[in-house]
Length: 433
Image 1 (cartoon, rainbow, N blue to C red):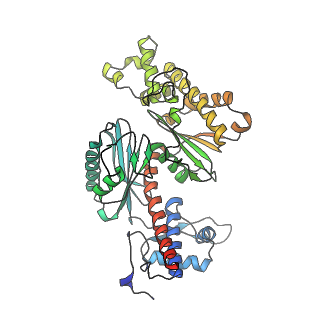
Image 2 (cartoon, rainbow, N blue to C red):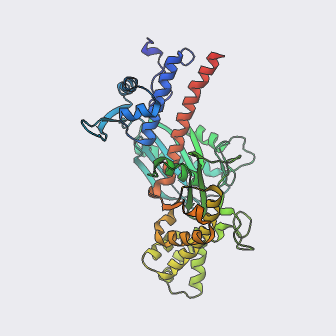
């Protein structure tokens, strides 16, 4: 048996293992099984021994032995009881609290929020609604890092237990290259945004488009059953799309799949910030809602929004319009109805292309509830083939305002687990050669 002094750990939350170059195939297989168990407990929550056996196709004694070893290392613990058909309820195994933390950062067009989550995906420290204007200035990196470091210091969480940082942002983001081709882009900078930030944090940093981040969170953490073909529409100032096909997030050949907001919908319509006219985003987004509201107020529409001060009107945001609609303001309701009808027309196209089981609406517009979902469904009924729309459920996100942040955190953990597994398997392949 290997001595403890020869055991290695890349992260404290990972099981100990012999150096892979010296490990036998049996030892390497055990290690990969342990990593798989930790990954399952993190993403899916507590499991019984029977569920672990079924998931990994292993015997009960093997599963118990692996779980016992993980408990001895302080990574897993017994807590609670699972369901029982009859007799004694089985033990539930879960990750031991406080073993690691992950930071999630969500960049929006005019503000950001960031939070540190523990391994139960509970927020331990957070900054909310911090002013932060997105533009093409690469110098935004330094203030972003300083703010994140300040939150880490205030949290009193041991630096070594912070595994990494996940950053979700709007724009054309290539997770493969670690670059945002809309923001944070300096053509003369040889390093990717990911590499620059990883160097500053001295931790792994992963960036992801915000809509794909929300999509990953919905698929990973939301109660969607066994559905493996879903679309997640993110609505805030803009419109984004995350696509899950056969259980995998669809990135496209360059990582830019899902630019739903920039499909042409209106002939010779409003100019979009992407440079084209008539994009869906110009008639179905937070930007569109604010424009409609300001135009209506100037035309003398009767609405509580007329009571806003000049400063408030100048800085009007979608949430104010949604709040007015939820209080019964008919003008605000009519704006949301127009937004929903336009969005539904776009979703009808998506349904006919992807034939999804579910379309989830997330972001600030999810708070509009029936004021947005009803016109969306009406529009889908008008523009989509019955055979496809009848098989698709339209629903609102159940993750609330933390969906994108949770997706950022999930991105970090998914990459760490995946890379650790790949490294163990790579050494095995090299040994066989």
